[in-house]
Length: 512
Image 1 (cartoon, rainbow, N blue to C red):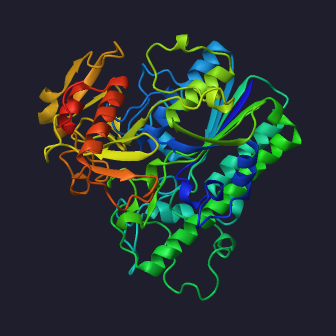
Image 2 (cartoon, one colour):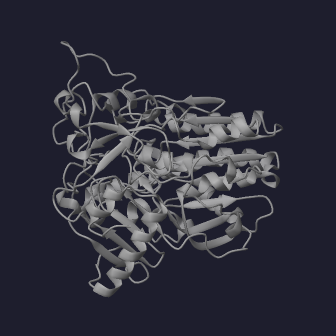
Image 3 (cartoon, helix red, strand yellow):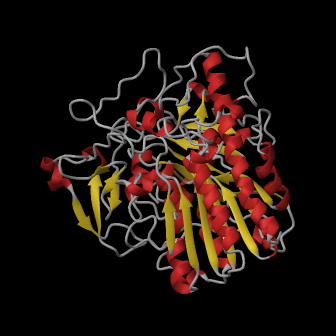
């Protein structure tokens, strides 16, 4: 059995012609794949952002109710570990996602037979040089808007040709590996391009496809800040064009992988899954980026295309989630869920792919740890905010005690004087593995967009939208009866996901 899983980071569904975009990027190879596969129209990220989404994919379980950004836990059964130990499958990763190499990215490469992570994306500090005295300060150039770091500037200075870009290297290496090993069997290839994640760096000839001379005469901004939109209308349009330019470059090198599948006739015996981890705001609702705002469609409604042997191309309207990747791949390899040591939340998609069933779940929950918990049944979306400004009770459960770039101790994310508030025990009903339990109030997550100490100004209100009449989520519905119906569905979905009991109290929706 052969499977290729392709993830292009921060791929915006609303810019894909395969999803009927009114403002599409040029993505002929995604379109090409869509013509071969089944396009899932109601596919959702579960836990966000980057590493939480990857944990969902690799384990088949949502983590957003239990922990924020952090490592794979020792008790997690990852997809790559299951394949390599149970079916003697060669599992291979190609990526340029530098978060695998820093605190908060522990153990994600465990279980891969071989893995390769290209360096130099975004602010990956691989080339940054010292200043005259110690650490070089990040001094933003005059008039600069957006995120800036010396590490990012150093990385960009090394992009001389298209094949110097880390995501291009990643996808080219994956294509070469696939070409070299097309005759092999029993392999799982994980291809993960950091692009089109910001910054929107690519050769100018890609931007020229979208922005002609005279269209824009302002600064060449490439990296929006994680904050309300500080750019004017022309600058925002420039950033959108830059995003689309990077999508087109990424799509070109996706084509190199598809070319190998064509060359060797691999579509006849290979499962191909194409998706992203989450999307990104580019001015919608007045925001840039992700994490701090409500869980709008711009981030959580994501693309999924699956091409499988013997499956007719088409579209699927059923509600699906990223946790469905693991059971789908296991079924393709003939592995039953009895191998799992705990219940999972994902459902195999093969019943939908074969048109044997019309749904695998009634609805889905999603969001960021410690902020609103969102629910969708495919028609409505409902964001349930914390009941009060304390955002309590809220606990983080983990045995790998890290968040993005921080460890929970040593005067880093948790102060020594707060150690007495940390407990250890068997707190989650679905695993007997002992865990640390951290009160949210003592976890000083320095990334302000993901910090969960107290309810934030951006996350104060519960919101209800009708996706059929208001997909852009610009007109919240005020309907108490409908809201109560969705609260009941949300609570039932949380129960099915073995939510910690305090989450019901935090959200003010009673007890399970």
